[in-house]
Image 1: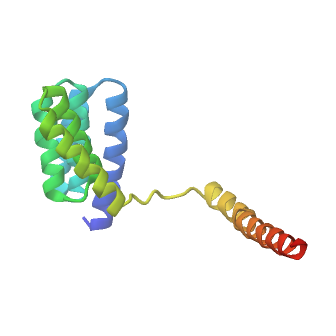
Image 2: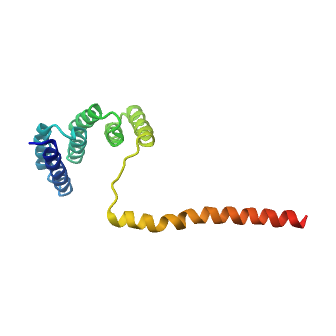
Image 3: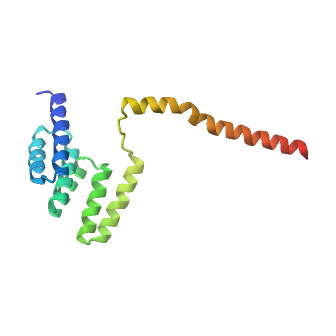
Length: 154
């Protein structure tokens, strides 16, 4: 099986696991993602989603372990750091929670997530680019014109 095929299977399984999580069928989602780890692709994301399932199921130990594994796979995974901080807060370990949440925020700033845009969103951004650029330029021209007129009056 090619890596592309494994990635496709992984994406479908992640989507299915999210459906199961939203439906409250946590154990099915956990089993699906645990099995998915054998493909060896997108492991950080798989562990992160496992953590979400464990957390929603009320298993804080499982959630903590999964988020830590996600961080081990991808140390820049800001969401895993954030959710681990939430687990610590839920357990009452405020100091570790604050530390983890601060680290998550720093990672979000250093490594922002790139969200793929739909064709409709891309089209909208292209249509709005010129007006969005024109507003500050016109404001600058207005300020310069105002300064010019004021200096002519003096």
